[in-house]
Length: 94
Image (cartoon, rainbow, N blue to C red; front, side, top):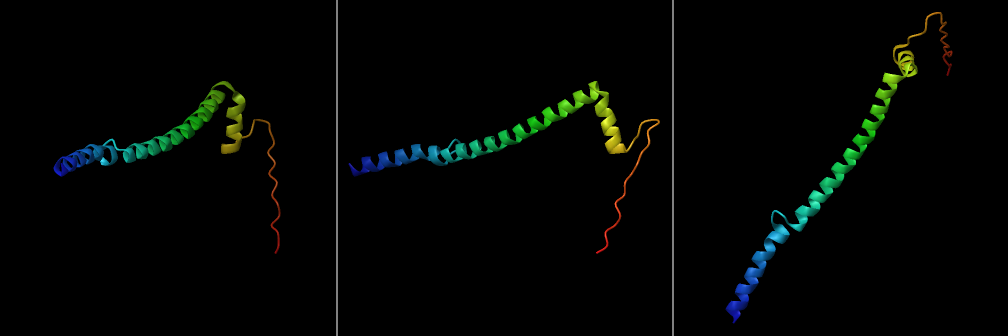
């Protein structure tokens, strides 16, 4: 009888091994769920960035104001017959 109980206990342990420590174990599932959540967060941020970039591209394709604004701010261009004034603050003495 003891031998039968021991054999059944060993069989139960062998059946439980894959559940706790095997390839599809609870620990592995939890770890993969955490990785999926982290990747979903990254994907969400990238989608938001893509939407903003797509809006900017559409604005540049359609509106001349956006192109003019970028030329002024990034390259320092001015319109023809336009006067450019640059105000320089005097250096402060300590």
